[in-house]
Amino acid sequence: MDIADLRIALFSGNYNMTTDGANKALNRLMEYMLRQGAAVRVYSPKVANPSFEPTGDLVGVPSIAIPTRSEYRVPTGLSSENKHDLESFAPNIVHVASPDFAARKATDWARERDIPVIASVHTRFETYPRYYKMGFFEPLIESWLRKLYLRCDALVTPSQSMVDVLRDQQMNDDISIWSRGVDRTIFSSDRRDMEWRRSIGLSDDDIAVAFLGRLVMEKGLDAFAETIAELRKRGTAHKVLVIGDGPARGWFEQNLPDGIFVGFQGGADLGRATASGDVFFNPSITETFGNVTLEAMACGLPVVAAGATGSSSLVIDGETGRLVGNLKPAAFADAITPYLIDNTLRAKHGAAGEARSMEFDWDAINQSVADTYIRLIEKRRG
Image 1 (tube, rainbow, N blue to C red):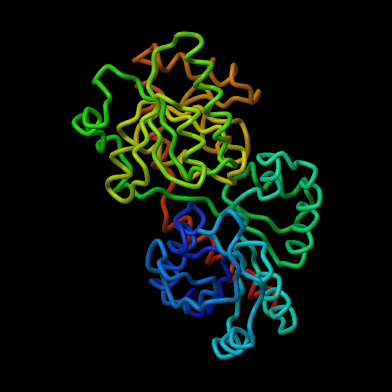
Image 2: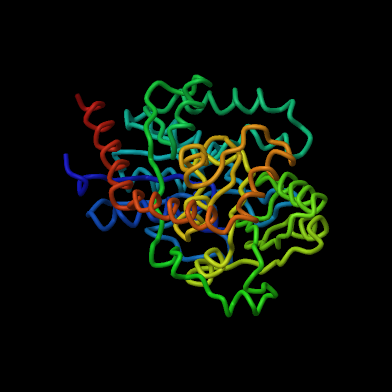
């Protein structure tokens, strides 16, 4: 079987509503499949003003807005029109990318027709409640996820650390890696712009600790702010550069009173902003990979990150940055401080991170998913 024989029905909870690492990866995957001659049909909620144009044909599914997070919509299932469209498209592989109600209905539809189903796991949804003081929900969410993933033929996830987590959680027996790449036309140490730094209030001698990502609490905003407070308490000179926007921006600004907030950046502007930081700090434990970590590495920044899924598969501790297992502000501050005071160390680990980022090529990474599609189809036919 050839990649051009693939007919892929992709179900995503957010294909282009707002920009995040998961939907950027999905769009890039579908672009690769289309470029290789595959047929693609995407089913996801539609909104009036999406963040970007979707790759491939996008079919809207029924959805509702999330209370207090109206920028997102949750699929509620599949309409009769969706099912008719699926029958007409006649996929030979179904790919579900979010564990919502539409994905579950799509899985039912595929199993009834003996069509293989693959699920991609993009984030650790079961960890989200702890950021809203509802950690007691975690076992329930984990059980809910397992019911879907055990009905799939295989799972793909971005890092070996996340493969290990999914196996420990007994989500499936067939789990492989769909890693992530980095766009080198955007992310490179060459994008560092001293004039831009000066325009936002950073002097040439300032060492900026950078945050990059959507401003939501589950990205570890509280840990970031508490660590910066610890650095202030110690009297360690630094500045804070926040790249991104989101519903928790007001909270973040209030808790980082001296932070420089440059808002959402895209394309070349995002590469410039990232490369214009000095140290990248990512305390989040919810990522399965950590696209922002790889992007910061590609820009030549040493990375201090939580020793959790995602970052632990990217950062080489003591070589390209530091992985912190003790997720306390003091421990994070201990790891960041050497980069604030030692220019040579900062440059050495930043260069090592940029070199490591060269290993992540998008086409080779996306071909691995195509290989998994084909393997599952041939196994089912066999």
